[in-house]
Image 1 (cartoon, helix red, strand yellow):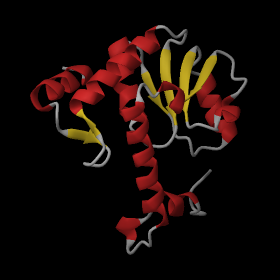
Image 2: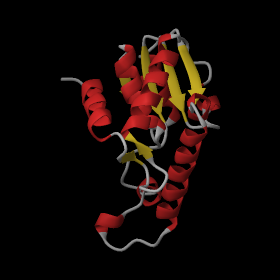
Image 3: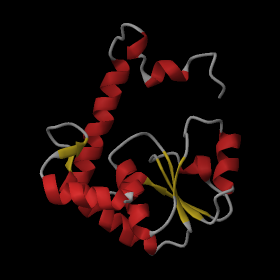
Image 4: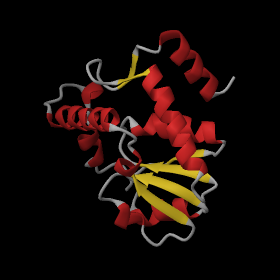
Length: 167
């Protein structure tokens, strides 16, 4: 059994249940399956041998993962928090490939030979997906700004400024 079979089974058995994002406005299994199919069609038309993802968690991430599986291309998630030189080196090793990144970060990855860089808002396939993606970004921003209490509530922003973590 592979990832795509699991998604197909979930879509067929409980397609109306929300699987990605908030209960109000998130993507259902059926929507995720549909968008993953569209992502696979798009990815098959691209020149890269694999799909790289270097961006924040958003509804595009599972669509990219399932879409690459559907297209028969390896999916390579990358830690976008790495230092530019290290991240560029890791990306360069994957060429030829398509890299999906956060909008506005394309310049960070420009000029890597054999890499086609695409901001994730360019692969959002319809208005519902754009709304789900924006809801996710707002939820993430609100959670990062909210006061935290205790070690289990450390936000991503707090981790990013931790001096004990290599950059």
